[in-house]
Length: 134
Image 1 (spheres, rainbow, N blue to C red):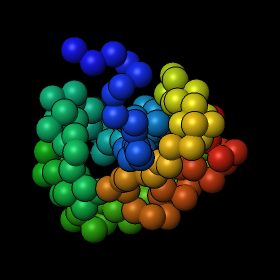
Image 2 (cartoon, rainbow, N blue to C red):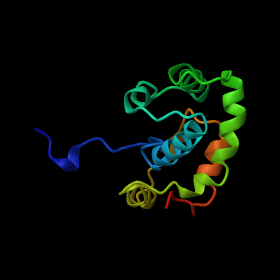
Image 3 (tube, rainbow, N blue to C red):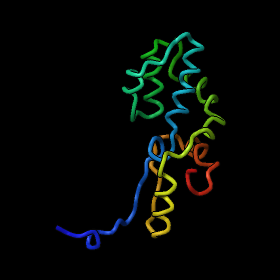
Image 4 (cartoon, helix red, strand yellow):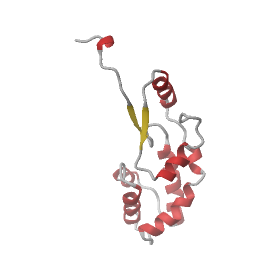
């Protein structure tokens, strides 16, 4: 068995942004809850679990269908997207995320973000953080 000093060195790290570095799920859930209330609907955790990992477009279609909303997926997007503006600032770093990124940076390990979020949404989520995801 190898000791820790002879193990392979980490050459790079790729992080998923949502739910790994930032607690965006809480922001998303609160916005959807608010949106559904306008249509007299209540969030269902089983329906929410089915949508994990879907793209925004796929998720929009699923929400309209699952909650039997009187909207097309396109109308849903037009109504809900403005609700996100400014609320991304509420997304806090998950415990240990900043410490891990600082550690990687201090040890010269490059890292990058991966996300299925739209680019402008990624910018909104990370724009108020100071080089980390604090």
